[in-house]
Image 1 (cartoon, rainbow over the protein chains, first blue to last red):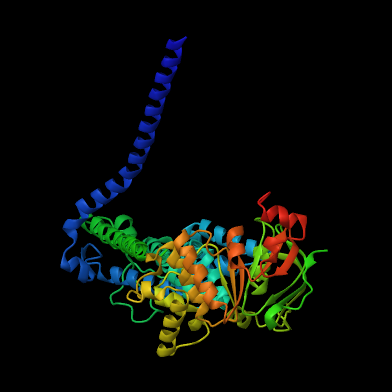
Image 2: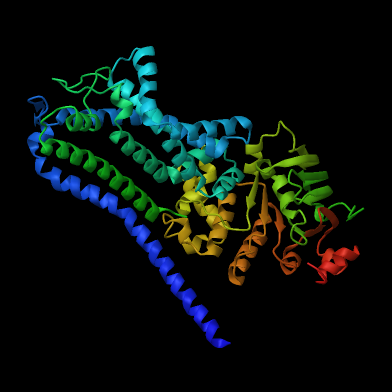
Length: 290
Length: 264
């Protein structure tokens, strides 16, 4: 009677080992695409990145020269977008985390935010074209593109803000109130400072996604080629992701160095933002007093 | 009908807080209070004891309106502080909470330095004068018997303190506001005997100037600390009497059973 039991145990141990091996393998497989992307892009693109490539205008029908206007355009778009999305998104997150009563209206707001996050980016682009470019008469401009990106990024910022604030223990709020504090003083002196690292992380992640998007700026801000840099938010601009799309698909006979160089610059920009977000988060965790 | 002592308060003590027919029902049907009436004298320690879940915390939290944060379904009756009802819509709740401070069972220090924890309440009230804040830090930490241990590291995070020190810091934080009443909800429940003794020592020193309402964490502490004591069971005030009478000659059989350790 003992032998079959032992056999079963041995078999179950073996199954368990196999199970864990499969799980480990799955985890490793998920890292392969990102490693390959970074490797291929950098391997083929780094060589193209020279000072001229970074700081000069494109020449010869984009087939030579640099991508400076595209880099600068992406920086402009992202900065302006942040100015729009950060205050609005953080305010909405504070409201949802701290003030929102459990009413149908609140539920409706949450559903709206969820849906906003699910809309395909090209739809944002069309919306931006219809609303900002045409209806608001901003024209194809940095402003229209940045606002379109801002709407797209809004759900990320709202959700991460709300989560960051909810992770601050409620007992801090109760103590503050018991000492004669108002709701707003709790938010201002405890919730926001304690939640700030999480909020910043959310904003940067949103920024990072927006910096790499093509579709939302396709109809609202981007130009294939501009002979001079934009001088006002109402000017159109070149932008890295759109430039990458153009040099990869729209111009025959394009040297691959330009394509991969552009991709590498975009990738480095985004990874750098990611790195900054990680550093902020880990430094804040180390300094946290609870 | 509870045995509420009808004698006037002894030693010429004034009534600080008068609770009249207070009934509280939570929306989720949790712990509630039924028709509580009692008088809490000034400059003394009033102990409210009884088994867990009986409504002691609810009563404490009603006195500085912290129940406002909870979902209360029904609240009737009155609580008068110096004769003025504090349960009305017109009550200045923020001003009330500065007059009636609360120390919780679990010491919750705020995520800032020791000094900032003490000055937090004053800063909320708009106090910016550096010298006054420093004075308050010294005064309240001393009164909470903590000054000697922390005076040379006021700018370190409050979380660097031990549990017992943190709880005394919470007491100091309340004292900084110079309240009239201090409510303490099992303030020593998580503390070691030595820290407990220090907190009890501070409270005995403080009662000369403050009205103290204490929910003790044990019947022994209740007996040690009480100038007046009330026994709360299942949302009702079973018995309330001056001095230690209640522990020596309880009048209600339920009080007697609890005091003698037959349940709890």
